[in-house]
Length: 475
Image 1 (cartoon, rainbow, N blue to C red):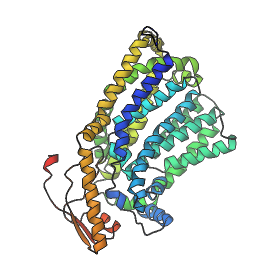
Image 2 (image 1 turned 90 degrees about the vertical axis):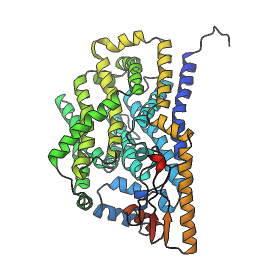
Image 3 (image 1 turned 180 degrees about the vertical axis):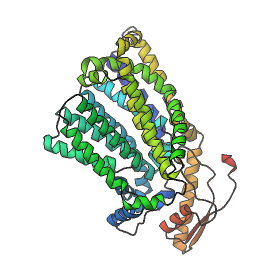
Image 4 (image 1 turned 45 degrees about the vertical axis):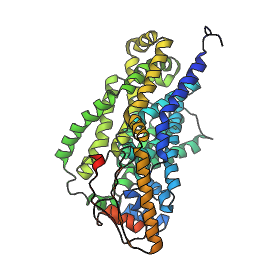
C-alpha cells in the first residue's frame, strides 16, 4: 500500500477494535489463577441439590436464583478447572448481554463494528471500575450472586424492550412468557437488584401512564416484580441470616452512612479518566442515535436532571440495604451491581445532555476523524494501565499472582496428603502473597474460625488450622 493512500474507515475501526481486545488480556489471565475460599466451602456436598436449595431458602436467604447458581459451584465437584472456567464464561457473557440490550435499543442504526466496539468498551469500563473485581468475577459466590444477576437483567430489559417494539421471539405469547421468566430470575439474585427492579418498574408504569398509553403490560410486570420480591423478602431464611448481625436495622445510622458513601463512589467514578474520555467520544454516537433511532430521540427528551438524579438513586438503593441489613458496608459486592447500572445510566444521562441545544452536533464537528482516533487510542491506553486492569497487570507482571497460585497449590498438596494418610488435623501457613485482583478471604489464625471449619468439613478433616505467622510482605 502506498504511504499516501488513506486507510479505509472500516480498517481503522477493525484496528481499534483489535487494540481494545488487549485491555481484556489481564482479566482473562486472572481466570487461570482463581481459587475457592470461604463461602465456596460452606455448602454441603453430601445433600442433594434440591435439598440444598430448600436449606438455603429456609435457613439463610431468599435468593432463589442465586442459590440455584451457588449449588452449581464447580468446586462442590472438586473441579478447580470448572471453577476457573466459570469466571471465563462470566467475562464472555457480560458483552453478550450488553450487546443484546444495545441491539434491542438501537436495532441496526449503528455499524456492526461500532456496536461491537461500544459493547466491549462498556465491559472494559465496568471491569475496570468495579469496586471489588475479585468478588465481581473470580470469586464464584460473589460473581454468581451479583454480576451474573446483572447479566440476566440485561437479557430481561432487552427482551422487554423488544416486546414493546413488537420484535418477538417466535410469537407474542412465547416472548412475553420469556420476559416473565427472565424477570423472575433477575429478581431472585440479590436484594439490591430486587429493589432496583421494583423502582424501575414503578418508573416505567408511571411514565407510560403519564403519556396516556396502554399501561396493562407495564402494570402487570410491576405486579409480578413485587410478587417475586415478596418471595425474597418474606423467605424464612432472611430472619435467620439477619440474626447474625447485631448492629443492623438502625435507620439513622444506615441513612447517615449511606449519605457519606454515596459522594465517595459517585465522584470516584465520574472522575475516572477513561470514563471521561469515553463520554467525549460518545457525542458523535449520541448525534447519530438522535437522528436515526426513534427510541433514542425520545430518550433525548428526558430532562438531564432526572437522569442525573437516577445515578444517585442507584447508589442509594445499592448502599442503604447493606447498612440496614448488616450495619456495615463490608464487602463491595452490592457496589458492583451499582457500578454496572451506573455506567449504563451515565451514558443515557449524557445522551440527554448532548440532545439539548444541538450539543452533540457541536461536539461532533470538533471531533474530527484524527481527533477521534487519537482519543480512542488514549482511552484504550488509560483503560489498560489504570483501575482494576492496571492493578491486575502489575500483579501479574511482578509475579504476585503466580506466587499466590503456588501457595494455594501447595495447600492442596498438604490437604490431599493428609487425606491419604488419614491425618485429621492439618496446619497450613498463612498466605504471604495476597493479590487484590483475586484474593478475598484467607484462613484465619487458629482452628476455630468458620472459614477454617467449613474448609475442614469440605475436605473431610476434623480441623484445618492456620499459623499466626506475620505477613511481612503485605505490610
